[in-house]
Amino acid sequence: MIFGAFVPNTIGFDNPKYRGVAWYARTVTIPKTWNAKHIGLVLGAVDWEAKVWINGVEAGSRIGGYTPFAVDITKYAKSGEEAFIVVRVEDFVSNEQPKGKQSGWYTGTSGIWQTAYLEGRGNAYLDRFELIADLENHNKQANVKVNAYIGGNKKDISCQITIGSEKAELKNTGKNGFFSGTVIIDNPKLWSPSEPELYDIVVCIKQNGKVIDKVQSYTGLREISSAKAPGKDYKHICLNGKPIYLLGALQQFFHPDGIYQYPNDQVIRHDYAYAKKIGLNFLRIHIKSEIPRALYWADKLGVMIMQDLPNFESCNEISQKNYEIVLRNTIARDFIHPLFHGAILMKTGVSWAKATTVATGSCGFATCTA
Image (cartoon, rainbow, N blue to C red; front, side, top):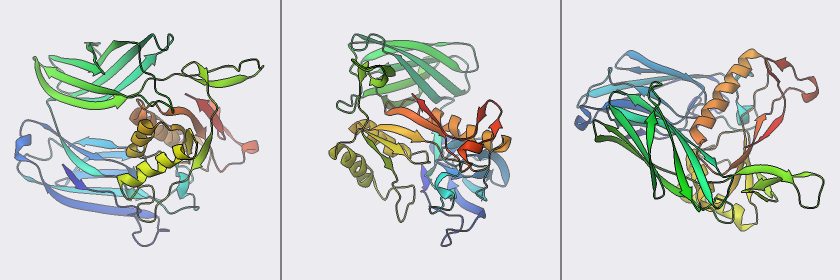
């Protein structure tokens, strides 16, 4: 049940330089058919600090500007009745938050800037899942480890996953709704820019033998590694065990009305299709976490991605903590996408030569290959 689409730079409205607080309020009616369901409020992305009230009661909060978060509002709202939703967003774009393109160079994206919706969930439901493929034998066999995290009432539940035509029953580890198992795929079709093969996924949650949640998704199987280039003394990046020459560009997509958001799905597809048309096999996403639909088209069309995480400017323990929030949430959201081959983990406004060491690492510039 979608009740609100993105509103770019809603903090400030017609003044993109405004920094501060914005309030959102909306009354919605909870469907009567959700009487026996958990009711989840999902906000696609809110920049930067958000608090949520349902019918005057604080229901949840979140820090981080690029990934979704959900609030279980079951005890604050009833099916068939109206719910008054209030969201307070604060974004002063401090130098200690990963602000990326909001560093004074581009139009800001403060506030609610991705779709908001209500979700009727079963008594138990799939919160998220991860796939880790072992492709040591490449085209012969793929061993895909599956980790599934179940929310809600976890009593007497089971979890099954289907990848392509292969099924597996996941084992309850006894760790608060954590299920795990392995799917074996013989003669796997591997994902690559030239052949972007994808597998359909279905995850079913059962309680006492009855399906109470079913999630459909997709993934691709690929391996990123490095090895000595044939006849050379240096290492080369490999895709699925074979050297690949990376030819890419910096992705700076920005849109007059939506800023980070595209005007429609056709425009998203066109941009990634055009990258392929001119001979590119990867794009580097510039200091932002790309929207999920764009990653879908990159997966579908065969465009590899180097993810450039949003940068901060002041280097201290607070900025490191904020950065880790964005990093971990981005990884959790995008874990099953086959397109990623690397990440630029830190890029700050601090002089690289004078970067201050914080905790286990230095603020500055680092590249990681997936």
